[in-house]
Amino acid sequence: MKKPKWVVEKERDKRAAAAETIWLFGLHAVRDALLNPSREKLRLITTLNALGKLEDAVAASGMTPEMADPRKFTAPIDPQSVHQGAALEVKPLNWGSLEERCVGGADGVPPRVVLLDRVTDPHNVGAILRSAEVFGARAVISMQRHAAPETGALAKTASGALERQPYLRVRNLAEAMETLKSMGYLVLGLDGEGDQDINTALAGKHDRAVALVLGAEGPGLRDKTKETCDALVRIDAVGGFGSLNVSNAAAVALYASRGA
Image (cartoon, rainbow, N blue to C red; front, side):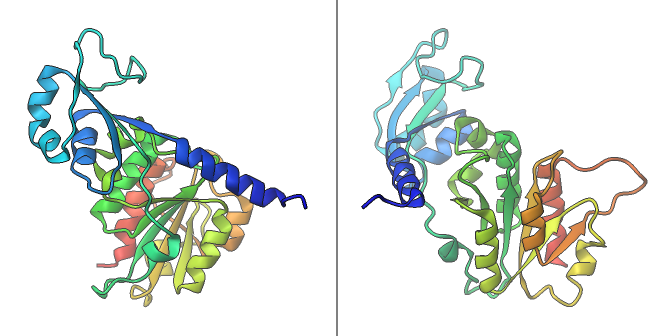
């Protein structure tokens, strides 16, 4: 009996994930990965100077670094990468399921999550991960395809947040939004044409779990994503000047959703 297409795709994705490795680079990204017990570490390449700065983290990891000449750095990364003399090959992190990560915590603080609709720039996603960590978001949720994967560039921009801030990848964003709704989340889509601002949408509802959905710069949210949101909200600007970069919008939205 022929397997359904979705089963074939799921098995293919699972095999690809098992074989996938990532090269992290830069002192902050490498240090935090070395100190992360949940990160499977495979190979470390450093210059003598970088090793001196990472000595404590290397010792804690138990890894034996391969030494490289700073004039001919041997790690298989883009030669233009600002690696600062350190590169670490790792396996992607497994953060578990959406339901596990997005459930309300025992601290009583209403959870916040960020969903990204086809945001492909790793620098934007890295910056969003930093903001999500600062504002205590449960997770940043993106798509398996047409989205920024876990890469060295993303990790460097995240400046260590990738090791601590859950970054989940889902097959279908609308389905993930519906799952969050069933868990009690209020799902708000950020859209320049939204008919209310975030504070108005959350008036009297700051005790609710909130999911903030942001789209790629230019295209914004897809129609299906908009339809799945409980409401579309905007970030009010002073005057008529343009719009925020998606990573800046995520930070502002997370702060506004706290309703302090």
